[in-house]
Image (tube, rainbow, N blue to C red):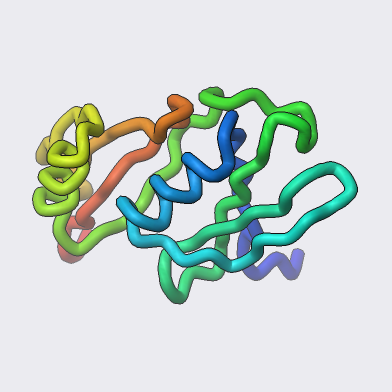
Length: 124
């Protein structure tokens, strides 16, 4: 096998503009693609410098259903500060909690897709 990385992860959303605002303005992601396609708008975002991007898939793209994605882990250098920022913006955050591999919290995007934040424990 010669796989080097994942290209994109699909996040089904009901409103691409609302999702775009959440991922760029609140999470600080950058737009990597935004173009019209025959099936609908192809919209991708990612943290700065990331190899893997997130496709914010609208209702007519691929039959995905908003709110069904779970387990997306986002690594951060300061989970506590990020949780405080999310909470201040009205996002419900569970945690952060200390775990053997680091300090972790979870939250959902506006469509209910499940995301996690992790500050990795040094040396783990």
